[in-house]
Length: 354
Image 1 (cartoon, rainbow, N blue to C red):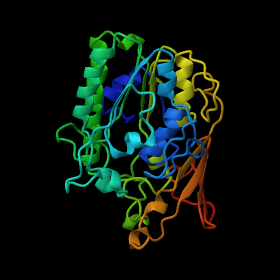
Image 2 (cartoon, one colour):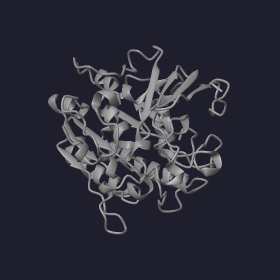
Image 3 (tube, rainbow, N blue to C red):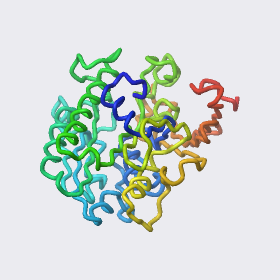
Image 4 (cartoon, rainbow, N blue to C red):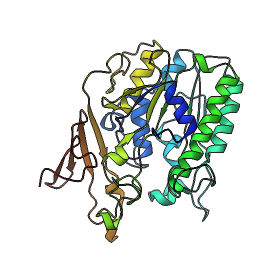
């Protein structure tokens, strides 16, 4: 996304500070978003699996704080992983989590199969349509709008013709186009100069060999990885993070390691809202040069059917990523620890602990 091939994102980058080493707390949508919206790591907000745990009631969410400070709050989300069941709707006056049922008529909330679940989504054109309508209704008041696109997930079935070298990139281009629709609406309403924009992805995607750093799929030794969820390598943990606000420089790249859990305190810092509760993140505005250790985890392998041969060897994992220099992955329930020198081995192909 940082390559300049997607017009809306490229323009946003020129108007923003962007972090080229931002790290997600988990390679699954509900867990990662719970960390983003609470400023807490999974152990503290409580969501570790799909539809097993809800966000803890004592975990304050950023939209609740904004609402308490006079902001009109709304959200348009597009997949099962953002369902209000988890607690995401707390603090949003409007929470649009409507999605279709699966092609066979079943409820997508009842499956942990990430590929099957991906068939139930609200496409980007509907998200942008509802987001722009919300802005027209609420843009005259201080507002906080959260919009969520899901099209860059399996089955990568966005309408053709938006660009990109393959179906995945075409889906990214489709999302980029509709991100541009929302940003244009801000301009039309005269809101763009006084609106903070935080653009991020909650996790990345392993395309089973489509790109040189991929590791998923039987041929590459990880048949359990179906896009994302089971592994903690950079292809799913390094994510987009772009912030447009007068408090940040325009067209500035920050290579120092950042984390999605830092969004919560950063936004409150930009809006000059004080919060005395505990957060695990650090404001990127005030502490951009402080070295950060990024924590990630996945317990998704616990939810897989281990009777299926492709999932039999899958194990849950925790990882720490140290200042863009080292990645250490702990394979839970085994003695295997992986260590990677990210400066000399950016694709994490040589485990130093062998």
